[in-house]
Length: 399
Image 1: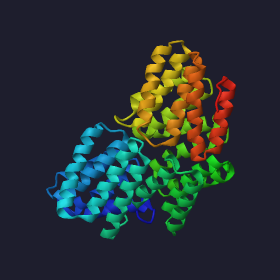
Image 2: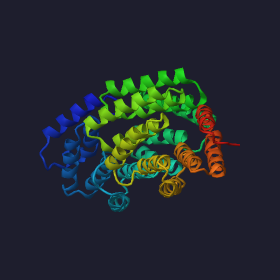
Image 3: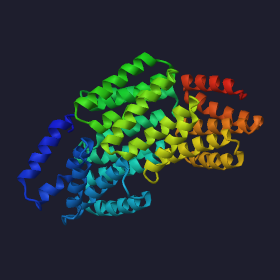
Image 4: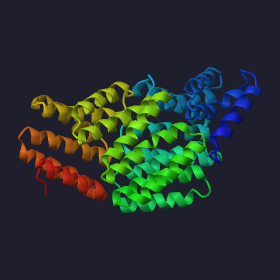
């Protein structure tokens, strides 16, 4: 698993557990790694069964680690637990692991907490939790979840406020540090692809994306291979190829639905709704917004923010401006609790479009200018150019 061969790793874990008795503590201690291997390769039911058995096995440390992994698989798969319930379980597990001074378990705690921070679009907080997790795993002499932790750190450079030139430099440094780990190289490549697309280096971005996606497929990491659909869509959007962006999203949504992964599916559906809205296909956009909202796990903020903003714009198109303003104001308030630059920029520019349709040219200009400033501060040159072109077409003035 640490060497990126999920196919062999999954097989070996299954063989190891089959040798041991059902209640053998050594078998139960393998559950966190086995659970993640099974989840990644589409066997969600098998992952949940292994973790449930470990939680009830009697060893408090094993049960705590299994709880953390179960939490993370729940939110990554769009499960039934609320974020509040997961946080209670997470902190109880943390108390057990702190008392035991269990370094590997504490690494899992910070890994799970990083995922919770990511769900509410807090890039800086996510990166901080990841650094804590990496330190505990280093103390334990293990590399568990290193790929996830580094993925979140790299992604924080993409989605957070770090300017593109600085973000590229940091991601390239992490790529160099990955050494001969193809899994870490693949993650760095797909992340770097997004940054290069913002700078306008589209062809190189496409090459890096294909390398990462193909690696995940060959390694047996089915869920990861499909989830990077969002990277491909991002690249095509920044290339001005919205039809190509839509194609990526539709293909990814179909695959994720077939896998039963509602968490990634709902985010892809929300982005598809935005792509359809931007292309003027408003009825289809409304349908996909409903799909994203209905499929989204509770607490996955980005899906609800985009669904509200898109629905608000559709209400504005229908002349229902007061209702539109209520939805869009709620989306703005929610997204301003985050530090994801693209989410903030998109929600503010959608608000500007609804204002323009309501006849509030001054408000639209002010809000649109703010949306552009977020892109300019990030250094998203292609994204800013595309938004200026859109505003010009809609007659929205900007500074």
